[in-house]
Image (cartoon, rainbow, N blue to C red; front, side, top):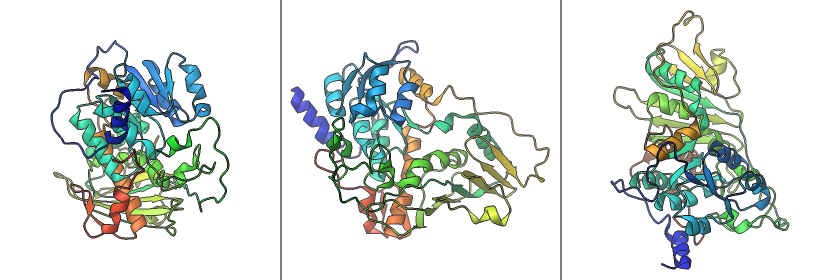
Length: 430
């Protein structure tokens, strides 16, 4: 196969269809000795991607890819031995034999394309949250990882902290009894407004067409890059996409949640292009094993659960509130509190049963080398991401979705299909 043909193949078929859960041999990323360094490529190495780069910086960084030379300059300087690229497809074409693992730190709408292309070549994958831009892509990511038996990890770094572990132990020990209700709130708000009418010149360091990737063509404007893309549906899902996977990770873990059966949402008036000013999304999860069904409600844009005022609970800016039959448990990234405090005075926490993490990136690195498990692999984080993105689907359709996770369909709401799997530009189609 010629280089040009292989490049076209990666471009046009790397995401062609959902994979199958089947046992296959590992691709080119074979197991390594724990003391042997991985050859890592990083796609998107400015901004948050630079932090991920530094998280794996003790390995051999063999390639760095970014569509903006200016944003990537710090990374290029830090790792001068790495080959540099703007197009991940060219990088994979030229260096697929040298690369063991790929880190994806791009904006949300360009997570799936490099992630799936790399995994189809047998490369282990670390990807920032949310795992993808839409529900269908998240399923493709999870199934491609499973089919190729790869070490994967989504960048929900708080998962590695001690506080989340202690909360999970408390909930699973029965400290507050069976939990049937959870509230999760976050003050984040990203909304782009109306599309700008002016079209300033593209900065000379930026490849705008590559930055757009699968998103519809539109003129460059600084209201999108380098960070404000979070406020536009074509590229992200607002505060929901930015923080749901961080905060709802906690009840997902503690309550062993998977896929909701119903999702509905309300919020600021729906804009066709710009993300919401605020949203409240309600999820119904079915009973699991001996655990009851759970009603989980998400709030962003400054909204908070009414129970905080009604019961005079701590007014944290962001947090998770588990409501159990014996009490409540409130948590955020770094603290947790059993409520009402008087009832739990003198409470002795259960023994620590969840080991401390060796570090979120390090966990993935060791898994790449030895086959050990990761705690936020794409099977777990894919389901978490699907739930996050379903909130945006329910909000944009204005209907309550009766959700069938097996078929990725809301049978009662056909118009949800365009948001579950969007039509991509030629060359980027799933």
